[in-house]
Image 1 (spheres, helix red, strand yellow):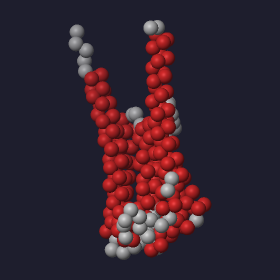
Image 2 (cartoon, helix red, strand yellow):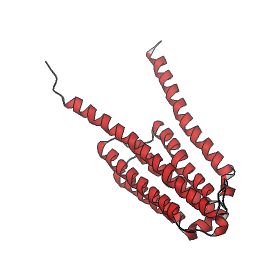
Image 3 (spheres, helix red, strand yellow):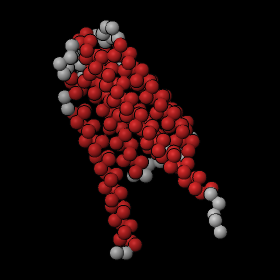
Image 4 (cartoon, one colour):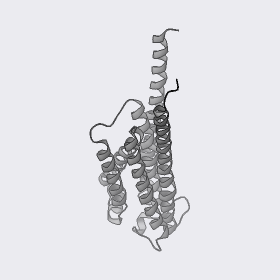
Length: 227
């Protein structure tokens, strides 16, 4: 087999892998947005949380991996954009879970659409920052951002779990999956703390492994060549 044939084969496998990541992300996103969860999320907080986390902690990383493997890179002030992405993600997540904002999204389709698009945008921005990071300082910055995201999502989840009464209007927490109203809100908090926390913990571990491999490579390159 010629060198050109080998190159074409590698390109084909790489393209298939990229398309696989992107296709999986898009199919899951379609299932989330076109399935029963949007309607359920208007009356069940746990369904809202499944929808939210499915977008930011499942669809977003799949799309980010596919885009980065396709050759997407971050230019300009990379660390500045990274920190902006993590800051916006925290504002969006906490903002949409404020009682007034959550109620507005549950009652008005237009607000709900904006909410879901903002979840996808900030989630994709955060995971793109992570998956595209290659330099040592970029990796450290993104690992710090992932740690902050893990902490603030876990904190929000714990607040929802520990709340002694409903934070949101009772008609928005009618319950799903057999839960009563307060249990429904608390289960949403469990999902936020567990699924959200584990997703960003896993992302941090992947980046930590990438950083360790880079440090090992740099150390090996610094070793003097024996005569």
